[in-house]
Length: 320
Image (tube, rainbow, N blue to C red; front, side, top):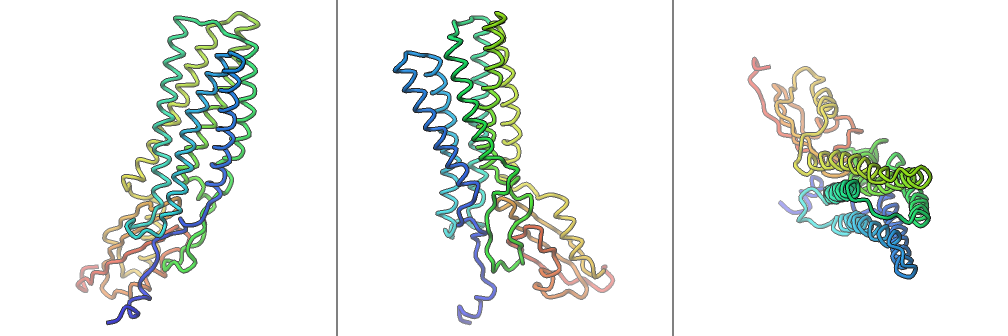
């Protein structure tokens, strides 16, 4: 047998990861914006001797680092998409970027809550004018970044046209599976929330003398951000550990195959191999089994199945 004889059954495992996604472009733009703001605040803090500006600049640096990791994850996945050492492509690099971002977000939240708790018992002097200015500018930048990274907008990958599973190019909700974009989004959303709470606290302290409002808002913000990070950490961990795909997709697969009344799905493994892209191993038992390709054609084409392996077992006539 020659290599050309097996080519019809060979396929790519790139699954569209070699294409630059809209999520990558958005994350890069926000990373640049955050880095520029960070440099401006640090320089202004040094030049004008403002600890408030310097502190916020260093805070921006932490988020710029996290966003840089998200940007790197996109670029790494794209540049190594054709690397055959990745069995199912580089789609999970996206999730790994989101997982790393979730950990960093959790640490930032805990640090923010800890510092706020310390200031509750040991208040420090606040330069209200400068602090409010920093918070307002930061809020404007963060709101712009939130709109750029809005995960409700469709920012998707395109997929291989010759996919042998008849995979349709995109689901309407693919962007919800982009954990890397979600991580970047939560970082800028956390910054925006921090700015809003800071403005409210600083105005209360300046005009009503409620100094304790500043650390209290910091603690509330830290707790909220930490909860976001736990949600993202949970979602990305499930993907990295190959947790079974949704029951909805599994049921659709079973319904598609069992329509003839003879074939039964004995075993089914469904897992994520990238944003909105799934792999599946299906064991089918039938008295009069169809060809493998016929079963694949029966499966709904809009389920995001990019790699399907089917095992067929012939039963005894009275077994089904």
